[in-house]
Length: 462
Ligand SMILES: Cc1cc2nc3c(=O)[nH]c(=O)nc-3n(C[C@H](O)[C@H](O)[C@H](O)COP(=O)(O)OP(=O)(O)OC[C@H]3O[C@@H](n4cnc5c(N)ncnc54)[C@H](O)[C@@H]3O)c2cc1C
Image (cartoon, rainbow, N blue to C red):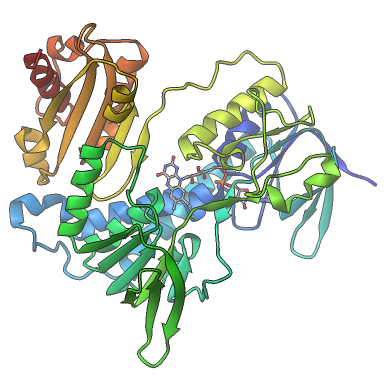
């Protein structure tokens, strides 16, 4: 067999694959990246992070949501917005991002192979493109093949009225009434987007509470805003049957409790299945678990020493932000380059409308650990900047140790939460105290001022 030989073959060009490949190329290794046709950039660029966040930005601007504090809650920016308004923006961002990534890979002399990869043996990978097959030999392999939406065979997906989250990006109409099954991060984000464009949303989850890893006060505030925008929560409810009433052209979901929910569209958002089960791993001496995930050690190395895995295919935390870092670290370790450890402290961004971000401990965890903490709060409504931005929804909450005044956690709901969280993250990472915010001069007016207001509030409680 005449296989093209590389020091590293990367399966998947999402955040983990890209950064792993570029890191190896910078170490002067010969690198190839394989991905399916039209998928350069991964789920992240084509159906996950980038499209969903682009839809969010478009909705925020086009609906006038950002400035409703000035013009009232009924204000609609450009009048009715259409799916064409949204898809135009999303598609142009996807094409640009894809080009940026392709150019980065080319600039680093990384071979790009389009097709579906599987192992023939531990060092040999076959790529099935459009009608042709290529065989590649890799001294090392990085599996960064990500995930796909988890589907249930009981749900009659048709890609139009009953969709998974990948298909939703390509929906052709905005529903008037939508049922969202699954109130995890992705389900909540899409539910809030549709509520923001005026759809009536029914959100169903069999778990009795949403976002159990997030501060309860922040989650309660999010739920309040979603209800205000027309969302009905059906929590602790199990879906037993989904179908289409063809005569009325309606989708329905029957619940175990006997309720029946109806809408024009149903979005099934109940998690992701990792793609490790599609690589013929047994030919490489490996196996994926029942959810398609691949087990690695602290160096991102699988049970076969020259095969590494990173990104969503290894499971938690399954974020684009952490996947990039994992890919880079995997390549560094593979080629013996000096590398740090994956930071334990990283922020979560939940891009609902309004958005949430958090870093560090929650009140619930500190209470369980019997840490004597205090809370400092700043409400966005008190900030000059949020008034100017036209959206006063939100709060910033800091948790700190009552005795040492060390910062323990930051929780934010509201505009630009995912940006300003990094201020708190930096102070936390350096073991700083809440007094830092009291004693520091911030730009004014800014949303960052919320840190100072919250610090003063917290210190006043001591
Ligand atoms: C709707 C949604 C919103 C999200 N929002 C955010 C967010 O706001 N912030 C955030 O940090 N994260 C977000 N995520 C998560 C983020 O998208 C993932 O964590 C990230 O994309 C994982 O990167 P990855 O490198 O593991 O691979 P992926 O991006 O999943 O890419 C994997 C690639 O591997 C390819 N592949 C798979 N199998 C094969 C094969 N056999 N042969 C060839 N190629 C193959 C696939 O085609 C794909 O292109 C979101 C996810 C979703 C679904």
